[in-house]
Amino acid sequence: MPRHFLSLSDAGPDGIAAMLADALDRKFARQGWPKGRADADAPLAGHVLACVFEKNSTRTRFSFDGAMRQLGGDVIISDSSQMQLGRGETVADTARILSGYCDAIMLRTDDHAKLEEMAAYASVPVINGLTDASHPCQIMADLLTVVEAGKSLPGLKVAWLGDGNNVLASLVEAATLMHFDVVAACPQGFQPDEEAIVRSSGRARIVASPREAVEGADIVVTDTWISMGQAHAETKLAALAPYQVDAALMAIAKPDAKFLHCLPAHRGEEVSAEVIDGPQSLIWAEAQNRLHAQKSVLRWCFGQI
Ligand code: CP
Ligand code: NVA
Image (cartoon, rainbow, N blue to C red; front, side):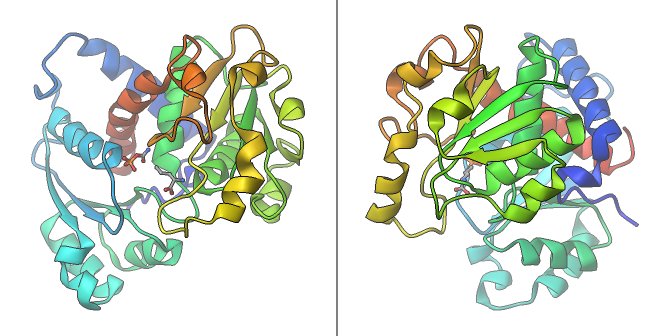
């Protein structure tokens, strides 16, 4: 059975901890190197990754490409609209075809069921590059950024503000697995899946008040109010307006609290420019860590971790 990375639970706490340690080591070992130079051990030499995008991407596209190059491997990237997949060829047939050309498949899709179908029919590892339901690679990078900032995961208080979306779903899963707390302030109608909150065994809870979520938080996180594939609804923007992360809200968090955002960001909507471009923001390290975290995800998929 190939080792798929469809969700953080596929790796579990030990797998996640091992990937974070590997990512830190490998990042440190190549400090100052040109970004295109392969790591000294080139652990994925001879391997090729297929990256299939049904939705736009900057970070996921470039970081998976860069990650494979640094691991000594190669990538083939395509938008589904340029593939027969975009004309109705089944995901199952695509999975079998790509498994014959490539050693692993990364898929970004608007429908989590398509990712599961890809994994069911592929004979190589399949990686979740974002679905409507989750974004585990993003949260691996976020955890790496938090650990790199000198914070230990168990017992951490993470505040989420805004839409109860795919990124929050993976954050809640991470909290459950790695024993930290997520307090999400989301308005009625835009709250995360109740089942995921129940599965978190008390690690995640939803509150109505942004102040309550942020009070004493070590990390404050938000994301776009309108995710890809969602209609741009004025009613949604209005409901979320009180949940903007601004300086007044950050002041309620711990004095050394850090701000995260997976990007792309909308300054003046989910976050003020003052916060996202301010001293507490770790967004550039977070985005850079997509590459380093995914190198370890890839190595985990190939049984090297
Ligand atoms: N954060 C993230 O996944 O960015 P992209 O949509 O640019 O890949
Ligand atoms: N929630 C966002 C994340 C983008 C990286 C979306 O799905 O569009």
